[in-house]
Each structure stands twice: as structure tokens, then as C-alpha cells.
Image (cartoon, rainbow, N blue to C red):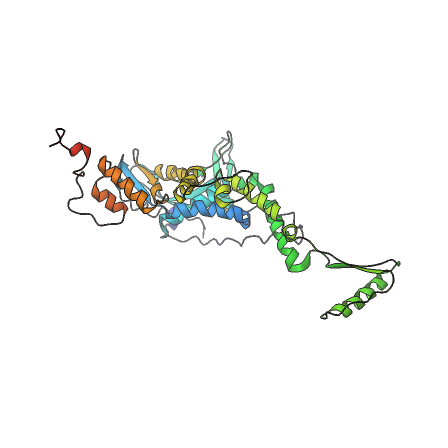
Length: 385
């Protein structure tokens, strides 16, 4: 049975293809400097990469998405848009998958399962793992698609890319382009962990002025270990012997500077603002006057470009003139006094009515709340009466 979710004969069926586990990247066979990033998820072993991707994915998953059938008119999401994959996991799960594919591989792939009968645009798209998709060009220069080795008609393939390059079908993959930076960070982290787990160095050196063969050296070591193991008695060495303890500073053994530097560099891969938000050393300083300012900077410089890409992808599935937008106000939280002052300004200048303000505060509407405020300037008698 074909594994492709999205083919007409398999609508509604779960994808039976099971992804293999993330490569362990063990030190055996390749050394600490060799890190396998051939699969997208392997880069998530670097905490900074995980933090950036997970932050955007979580925000896209939890931030309310609004549907505008006409400008400035909000309506409930179409039923099909509430679950674009048609697998029962809903829109939040779909947008989270979209973000992971876009940020790690620079490409998002899906197989169309349902279409709008009138317009022919997809209404059900099963996203596919980017590492399983392989495009190629035929003799006529048209793109042929294969997913896990199985050919998929070009009309059924849905593809969105990030970091496009002229003359190329696929967008650039940040993980592939910055494999050296990500791999260095993972290698340093693994080496530091192995240092403490197995001991990456001898704890001391027992040296002698005499020339010893291997057998004599082993005998001296065994006798010395027998004298000190499990005891706290002093050791007496004969003439010509010297015992030197090897110690290393904690910051050197854990490669804290290397990890900090590579973490900041990994954050920069996904755009400005991430390194500052997570507090990594970036060579500069960034201060915030309040939590609201921090949220605005997070939204403006780091997360918003990725949210816009998701909005455009979903808007492209709608009829002309219809759009979807994330309600970014849900991210920018203000303190109670500032929020109420903003409400007062909106009511006084007739930007909003009482019921709109009450809805923002999760309050029930009131019968008299649909009309502009009587204290608004537009409702006052010009004569002052």
C-alpha cells in the first residue's frame, strides 16, 4: 500500500510510514568533529536551533488565526481550513509542521487530497517530511516529484519555499548552508558531556626519571593504584618518581565560550532578534523598558517574518479577496492600567464600541454596548448644550 497521504484512494487514512529515530551521532567511527546533519531533526540537538524553531512553531500554533472574507470583516474559519490536513489534528498542528519544515529545510511539501470543486484550489493538504521529497527535471524542463521513491503527479504536489534562488526549484536549507556552525556547536556539547561521563583525559601522571618498558610501567601503575584506591592515606614515592595531578577549569571542560558563541550564531541563522531574546552573547547589548517592549521586539524582528509566510500560504488557498491573519495582539500583552487607557482612547475617538472592548477582555456583551460612547466627541453638541 502506498504511504502517500493525500492521494485520492487514501483520503482520511493515516500515514503508515514511520520515521526512523534521530541519528545518535555517536563518536564511534567519525570522531567528535563529525556530526550527521543529513536529516533535518538532527540539527535540533543544538539547543539554540531547537529554541528558535520551537518558539516560532509554538506561537503559530497558539496565536489565534482570523479569517477575513472581506476587508475588516472577521468571520469564523471555513470548516476545511480548521483542519487543512484532514487528519483530525486541526490547524494548530498543521501550522506547527509548516514552520518546522520551512525553518529547518527552507521548503514545505504537501500532497493534495481534496480540492474546491469550483476553483480547483486545494482544501486538504497532507504535509510531507521534507527529507523524503525529491524533485527532478524531465527532458522538457518540467518538475517531476517523488516522495519516498514514489512518483506524485505535479498537479497534486503543493510546494512552498523560503530563501528562493533564481534557476532553482527548491529554497535554500539553513541547516545545509550552516552545517559547520551547527555541527561545531553539537560537537562541543557532546565532547563536554563525554568528558564528564567517561573521562576525556587521565586524572594524573606518574612519572619516573628511570627508563621503563611497558611491563614495568604497568606494574608501577598497578601498585600505585592499589595504594591509593579507596583510601585517603599518604603515598610514599621513591627516588626519581613524581606524581602530577591534571586539572582543568570547568569552563574549559564544558567549552562554555564555544557553546555560547555557536548558540548565538545558530540563532542568527533564523533571523535577527532571536539571539537577543534568548540572552546569548552577540557582541552588543539589548535592554527592554518593559515586558510589552520585549514582546514587540520579539514579534517585529524574530517571529513576524515566519508568521507572514504562513499567512500567505493559507491565503493562497482562499478565494480572491479573502485573507487570513494572525491576531498579533494576543502576543503583545500589556499591564492592566495601560490596557484600560488604550480602551478609553479607542472609545473616546470611536475606534471601538463597548462590546468590542468587552470582547477583548473576555466579557459578555451588554445590550447598550453596540453603539458609540455618548461621551465621544462626535456625539457632543457643538454648542456645548
